[in-house]
Image 1 (cartoon, rainbow, N blue to C red):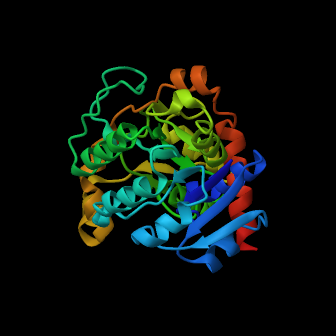
Image 2: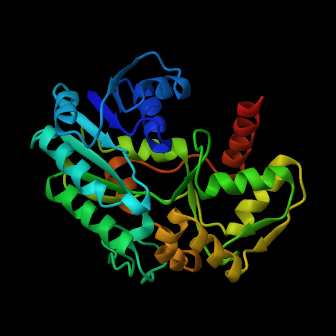
Length: 306
């Protein structure tokens, strides 16, 4: 299958490119900066296509010979409305016969009504960003695309974001301050497992128009996960909750933190995804446990610095 990955220099995009190659697909990486992609991905069996997801003509040209697309482009919260334009051009270029897979996230949820949140759980986010994300997902499934909703992703290839920051701080052995409830039920997903989830709908007719949720390996708490990082780094865990006042200052001083402020409620909720449908219909389950995933990530971060 000829599959194009948009946003191929990002965490999910890079992981999907590598997983698609491993699965035997022909892969095209749609990127704005080919040189950056080649610095990050050493796989030679990838066709690199330079283009802008916000340029209708370049999107159409890139999709002309593709059978499917995994849409991993992301925009900063302050530019989130650009997702609509990007999705419109992608759907136009794919047409009705080609397959689209779109990664969702937990922003779409409000207060959980069940221990595990599956595809049919209400998308009732009180935030603007969560509402936009839910509407984007609806637009994808309305055109027979597939949504695979993921928790936070960690692992080799994650160069930025909250979990990367937690790893960086824990590796120093200094006190790590985490916002939200330290002992709430929580989960995250190893990057390679996330990529397997995103490619699992390909060539599966029953996945057309479907919505899946792909959980982490198991429930864990933020405190337990951070402790694993300290242990893998050879340090005694030093973990504290981030004082609310300091968190508020960060949100006010940094533009993207201000934009994400409306999502702060998620830091206090036990958000766990239900993997029943994706396991039964697509055969996907997470494979990498937290201890092994953390060890691999610590090794990768240290290796990338040498």
